[in-house]
Image (tube, rainbow, N blue to C red; front, side, top):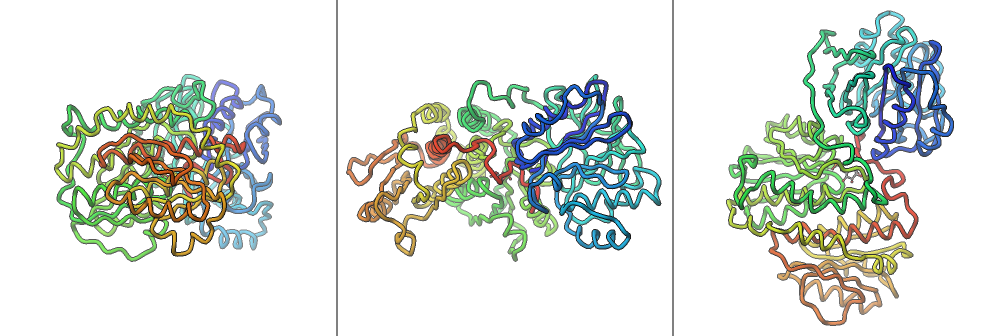
Length: 588
Ligand code: G6P
């Protein structure tokens, strides 16, 4: 969601800014823009749609050594050229990721002072406020400090000022920002992939810190404008990890990396069927709240069945966007688990802070190292899925389910079950390499698809259904199989596709009855099962291996992910960057 890149140095700036923007495409956006300095003037160019539209309009060889770039995911005002970033007001040109909640009252005040706005954005208000405050402060750092004190909401800002064309300034609150340097210059960026072509060393800008970067130097100031020393971080992966490496899409590449995501996660916490010291023991907790958004929420829902079965304690799973506004009942033995691939999801982060403020212990299950959620939680355990670029998460989901199962087994003191994880990567490989095109051909022309399952299979159906919505723009609905007859079955007619997941032997017969009910109403059924079913109540069947229940839910989702991928391809969708969606959802 909104990407920021800034470069100042000895090399021409536009190729670096463009390549940075392209590496941030995965975050989701609907317009892009740049501002650069040429002959002591700031030049702004913006285009709606893909970065390639912008690229066609600019001269990459332009004689410029400093600039900022932005991909915008529209929040305030539609995706048009005027609302796109950068925004200029007076001496200040800025790019922004986040949402300013009090922008309207600030805007009203500024209008009274005679400021004229051209866009509908909250960002232009920040530029105007900087410009106003600068008139009194006459110092850029002091101006940024004063301005950010007046802002309510979240922001990562890249700032240039006509009075100092030797520096790019940046600050943040709630939205991420990093800084980096190589022999050719300095960078600011929303995320590490934007700078990986040049360096894998970076610094994290902390909340409310202000960065001032020049070609040779990165200076960072705290909110008393005292300079602070920053710790250098090294990104562990390689540039290859963020390249397609011959795959047609990142979604496909990342599904093919699921065996490694599983194995790396397992090996980080387990060795020779024993837990390593990297896995803490949470057995003192008597109840668990799992809080997350999107697929991470479904991974939490899957794990609820595992925690309750093996640890025998109550687990409540909540959407972060609901949890943070509702009345939550904790006791001192409650553990709040926040699950997040990006570690930056605004609602998940807010829920974490809320639990923390209530004095409750928090555990973050996060993929991105040193992300806000990872740093904010009392305990942090990393999934080892590697960088995930496609908006629709796949390998990170598998790694989340794996890690949550391990946490549950550690709490349950069931080290004996770790042997069940051995060799699962081979089953993953087998499932990933099968041909799902025939099922996709059966599904892709439908605009309504139903998923049904019971228990953990229902949780997995929810994730399978989300994949179809995200990647293939198909309205699909996942239902607890037993609930179908309470309304939704009225939508089943001739040839309505129903995908049923049935891997839990204890309730398989009940699910089969529900499948027969839709079949009796002439639905077309695709059954995904590990049960030995030879009856002919389905139209298509995908056979899964019969594994121990504690690991079954790690692999069951794979056919649904690949079906969504194939369906999206047949429908000609923008698979890695679906419309309206963002990978890292830093707004509420
Ligand atoms: C976005 C992504 C989803 C993801 C959700 C939560 O909506 O498109 O794939 O599941 O955010 O993200 P998180 O980074 O917190 O797991």
